[in-house]
Image 1 (cartoon, rainbow, N blue to C red):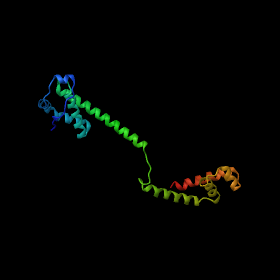
Image 2: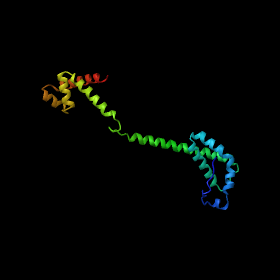
Image 3: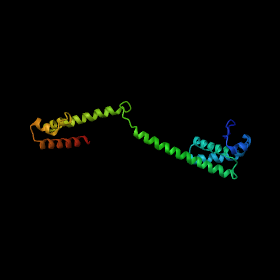
Image 4: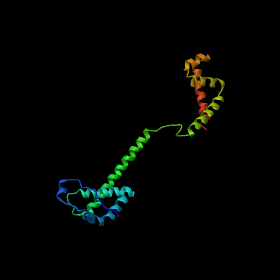
Length: 183
């Protein structure tokens, strides 16, 4: 069962200063309603810890009231529902914020993913094998472009071929590599 802590001090509001709430009287006033409040909060929040927090916030809201509401049970349930909805909104915003923060902070680290170097090595071996299967003309043109970074005009000058031939060899080499690596 829930018990109020006697060391909880009431904020010094002018209305509260004029009226004295005895801790025992306050607890006796709330005792019949606590089970209902906890059941309502657990039903809305699906978490015993969050439910206890919502009920405690409700009790604190009552504690700071200038006077006891006329329809206490209804006021307590309504306030508990409002506190639960506030908790749900807060948790929803937190989840969204954490999701955005996680998406923006995507890191690749070889230490974090031990399979990454092995996969890269396997892909490089497959690529090297596929390049080796190209015709000599296609392989030479492809390697001058991809490995050496030469421009089309430079490749044409180095191989003494027209630039259109460079383009067609590179196109056929890329298509062949794409087919072989698509497996």
